[in-house]
Length: 342
Image (cartoon, rainbow, N blue to C red; front, top):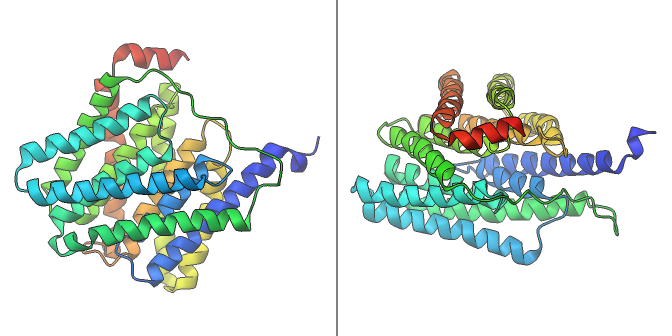
């Protein structure tokens, strides 16, 4: 049987091309326009595109955008009103994280849950660690959400699915929620956020908590300890790719080089993340790490200089090991045993 004619393979190719197009174009446009957080719109677009082979219905698109923006506004208000009162601020922040992790443990919410987590991490960090950006957070979020949505629709228009054929991925497995696991994940993420909030390194603050949140979401899908180790390795590989990409960019620092570098990486990682295999979330996580690290490398944010790139990969490695270690310690043991034998 010819692989070329396999509907699943053809669907994967189209989805991978959509992701590569949206990520490379979105990233390049963000850099060209001088975006403070250039990885935000391509990250949103990639999450939307990897969630389904069909574009989100208009109603769901608007709903997801409203939820993400509402989260950003709420986080802005919390940061403004309670930023100097750590106890109530962290309690409300933890409640937000707990709600997201509870939805993830039940297999609900899809990509929107992770994007809400990203917003609930970035907004407090920017609002507290960089006062100059505090007033620009809302415009950064609006631009990211709108650009990500436009990229999603544009990618589907250029690389559409065949009419009358539906190759959308299977719906996520809905399972009983695990409040204890969600609470453990909340503690793990909150400690990472607090650690970054008490430092002046904005680069570390952007990388570590998002890496922790990404890995915790992927660990829910891990079937064994070997798979969990594989998650760490593949995510760290995304950091290594970002370092290599930045070194190549230094040889010819222009917008075309950025576009080509991101396009190649997105084709490799996005193509694997678009498959129906069980390791697809690993490569989606690696793409997330790559976008964040490479985005920080070219960002005008303070502390984003090239000499700190090796340090940022170190932060990613520490975040991955930290999340894996404390998940093993804090997660309910019956749940871990059940997953290990499944």
